[in-house]
Image 1 (cartoon, rainbow, N blue to C red):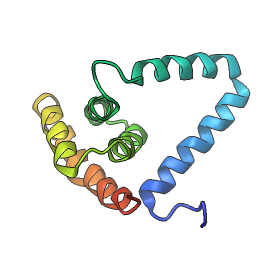
Image 2: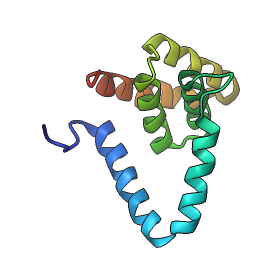
Image 3: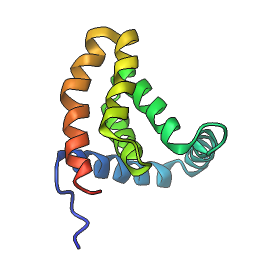
Image 4: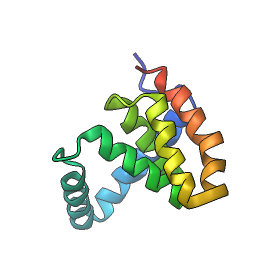
Length: 120
């Protein structure tokens, strides 16, 4: 099985992870502390992994962070979120972000759900 990206969503996630690896080599102390912080934030607690990924996706769409949108769509799918749950989370974000959120929801999120769902 090839590790080559099979679609644009996978390619973008691959590029992000590659860039993160380079950054970690250049700034290991900062990267280690950042990674430890984010791992603690996403650790399962009163909220499960799926819920935390849905929250992160909503924030990513609201802030127009395309790499995080793709990364957290994958996180949602990896932790068992359905397409309906993802779309409802985006709907809540749209209540705050209006047109900018909707433009990401009807393009990037829908494409990523379709492309990354094929992996499950």
